[in-house]
Image (cartoon, rainbow, N blue to C red; front, side, top):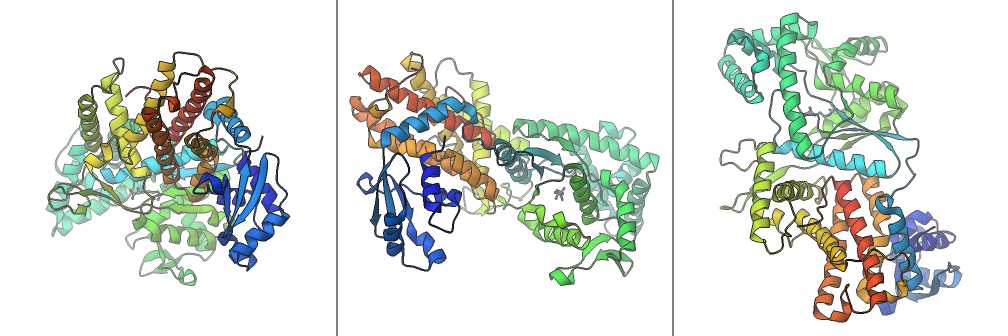
Length: 579
Ligand code: ARG
């Protein structure tokens, strides 16, 4: 059955050049209940109708046929406000949520369609740093959001395991006589790389040896391949472990090296079609017509470049999946690369080129507690912060925080597990609650605050709902009298719960998990207001005297609990029952 927002959207769409969905999305809650229950801001329609907002409101009021459950429409300045049968809407919303459970907010818009999401995609032989966080968690969250909307999602880790830098690694292993490269740790590899690079500085011979080593690798020479695969295996193990802590996983690891094979064929074809050009020995795809610098495929020494692997990778994804969209969750700094990629694919005659989308994001910065300035990397020397260590720190801090609030902690909670859920959740939420193109500033205390705009705050709100339900000690009544949910705070909650499906759609449309995070923060704030009112007045308590009212309120609490839990799951966060 349709929600009230959908019904109003449809009724309005009869008279307006907008879709029912868009109109439903425009509906707001008037600032005070005497004004109405749903308000359409008509100023948002002026640009389509070329009329003053108050005139639009007045005309619509006279024309629109009110759907069932709507008692009255009033034009109020720039708004058209609707009064509805609140108990009917309340009942509908709560019943829909309780019947749907974890499926509430699901949709079939994606049925039969595939979305390919490239996220994570780190380079091997280096630790995961804090700068690897955004791609991993934004990608994973989008995966869950699209999946909820019925799409088939394919998560791809386009592992960076190819490029001239691996020539140095191989040359280093050979030069320093390392017999068992498979025993190197990722830290050893990083050290080896730095040692070789430092030594090679101003030593043309060593630089040449590194280039030769990469060429040997490209040609498939056994020793080069053996060293390189050993480094790759070790790196992958570490990546799996750290991504696992974040709940991030992939359907496919399709490394760049995989496309080295296809590369020759691609370059040949592009040559035949006259798409690539030689320029001072290098191979490029000119993109003047798109106003872009040329896409570089090969250096003059024959070594292939990053873009040269992304082109066949995109073609391969298309052949495999005929995707509705292919998303690349990669930082702002690669925006030129993805513009070139799309333009080059278009020149190659691929109609689907406009289905690829760069889902970009900003930097992570840390606030220096002494200077108050935010900067990339928090150590004094600006070194890279390891993702694994940031998570350790978050978990340790969460643990202290939980222990400090010991009176809140319920006896049965497993402190170790809880600290991991809250600590990691705080980091994930900090990232995902920021609009993705913005930089994110990490401040330990703010991130872990149980009262702020944080992950722990949302998790705590969820645990509090669970605790009320436990305290009630009664099974959920099958039939409750929803008209007993007559408090203004309850109506606000109902309206908010009704909006969840729209928040999911909005997040998907904009590739913006922060839409879910904001939704959750507002919902928890509304709940908190309700809860505090109950602290002051016993009649307003969920667990009030009157049994029928209590049963109705418990149904509302249960519905809110479902929605918070689903929202957290879309962000990839745990929803502990006790905190
Ligand atoms: N490995 C690259 C890096 O660390 C990111 C790869 C992103 N995905 C892609 N298809 N280009 O910068």
